Every structure is written in C-alpha cells, then in structure tokens.
Image (cartoon, rainbow, N blue to C red):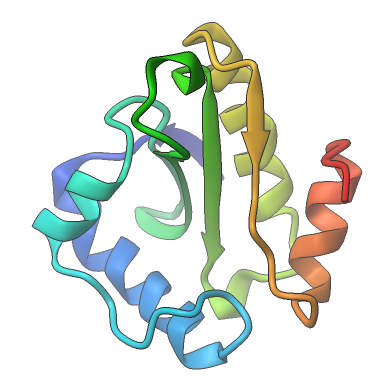
Length: 133
C-alpha cells in the first residue's frame, strides 16, 4: 500500500468510498455524496491523500477549514474514509499518520475531527494519534 497525493482522477474511487460512509450512517450526517466541484470547494487544496493498493484507492483523507477568519488559518478539520473491505487493516493509521505530518509541514497547528459517538473505529484511530475528546 502506498500513500500519495490525491489527484482529480481519483474522484471516482474517493466518491465511492465516501458513499459507503454515507450509507453506514456512522461516518457523516450527509445523506448524499457531493459532486466533485462541491467536494473540491469544501476541502483545502493541500494535504489531500489517498491510500492505494494494487492500483485501487482504498482510503482517503483531506482537510477542510474550520473558519474563514485569518486567525484560524492553522486549524483544520480531518476527514478520513476507508473502503469498507479494507477497514481494520491499518489503512486509516497510515493515512492519518501521513496527513498529520503533511499538515504540520504546511503550517497547521491544530487538527480536529467531528466523529459520531457510535463510530468506535474512528474514535479509536484518532485517540491513537493523540486527538483529545
């Protein structure tokens, strides 16, 4: 498995994985998957990553701004989604580790994540990376 920068061509896999999250009812309050343009506008252009295995995207991570106020330029919200067939195989750990490292290089000083209380796997993943509740 490799972790690499997300490219526009990855959208088909990224949106497929996002839809799985929507369908799970524990990953997001969204009820539909956004279009590429909507997703692209909602996420910071830097620190967009995918996990790729045998040429297929099996997970993704990206950041979105928490505020438009300049004083919050170093604060971002984490989105991380893993293909349901690849969950509990270390994909999330690799993505979050790389995302945290890349975010720090880009000048982010705080990362936060809104996680539903019944999404136990995501809570555990974030706790393992010292996210505080």
